[in-house]
View 1 (spheres, rainbow over the protein chains, first blue to last red):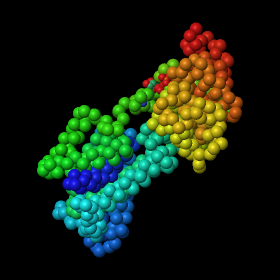
View 2: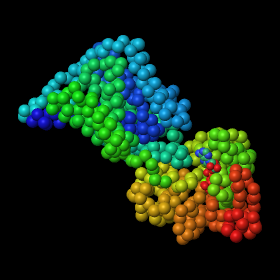
View 3: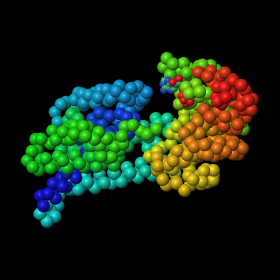
View 4: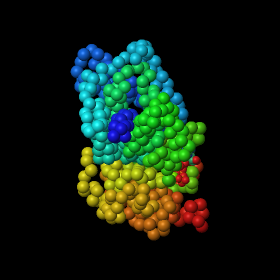
Length: 292
Length: 232
Ligand SMILES: Nc1ncnc2c1ncn2[C@@H]1O[C@H](COP(=O)(O)OP(=O)(O)OP(=O)(O)O)[C@@H](O)[C@H]1O
Ligand SMILES: [Mg+2]
């Protein structure tokens, strides 16, 4: 029974990693950029929510504005920082992303100080526990898992069935060919950033409900772990990001369960190193060389 | 219909196209032939907006498209079927065709049926992932996809590349009937013999310059062409 509650624990954590990993993977798929500022978008979402909640406002409003804030910020970053580098070498883009990440963290520190603020998580999701037999499930875990499943279904429908989703796949497979189809590549890229950061916004709220502290650097470790999840699943692959996220969540929970909780971060990065050494394309990634 | 006026195109410091001018009239098949690296693909990419000329201008149906973005040029009715086919290998045949109709309001059944009528094999394989098609089928998909935007003019970059002789015949027949049904064609080919056979007019490109032009027949019988491109 302990196993079952650990399983749910891992599913909750893994869901959050998956939501964040999707943003990394989709953006990488479309412009070959490891968007290291993605984790800091989560931090921004956390601050927006915490400010609205501590002002005593409606949690629904806080959630909606946090998501909108994440979307606007990431679209703005794309326009200002990444778009001018569209034809620059990928390494310039990567360095820019790291710069944006540092900028956002320092900006947050300037605005909100380096001290962590506590996130009123019970206002968002009441602290209710369900007992099924001998296992204990928190409402937070349940909501996290259900919201993630719904988000994944919506994302899959979006990417597989809608015109915009198909355009995203076309651009990520062959940008020039997509242009020749009449696809507006720039707006498709913007849309991809918006989609990824919507998921980040949702992930941000769910993360804060589990770890109720908001700080300027909260996004960096979460972002890095989600990045590892994306690599593990196969960067660029949407189902890969989902699987990778869950795998990392389970790995962390498993490591803590055997009493090595201070080792979880090390294990996650060990996974990264092993994946890069053994199978750099991850579970579902395609090999870098496309057949001609 | 299409007018290229003294364009110069560079890849960084490399001067790939050096003052090229030519014209395509409505209803024509115009062939652009030349050896490897002559600059044929570069010209097509410049026309369709993937590359920008440093100087010169391009007009399509009285609209200046020199600085127009690629995705807007398609909307003008000018389709480009690129070298190497460039179909979306991870998408299905049907999805590839839908992408071809991206500029249209919806994907209308008539245009799909007309493409399937031209390429019956695509209909059989419409649910298949494009990466699993044979080379000939991929070429047909690339052409079918370009036709989905109902172009007034289509540019084909080496449609016969890598295909067995029988399939090459088939592709050239399709180009001919396509033209007869009213689509203007700009055809880039290394297979100069076949191209000159179906072309009304042709231009010969050598290292970024047009060195010869004339009707398909004239060029096919010219000694220079025979020596350089027709193996004798
Ligand atoms: N991306 C590029 N960067 C630099 N030089 C390029 C690039 N693409 C083409 N070139 C050069 O420009 C010239 C023209 O190339 P282009 O591809 O237009 O030739 P082509 O006539 O289409 O040849 P092929 O018959 O082999 O397709 C060549 O010398 C080529 O090396
Ligand atoms: Mg070429």
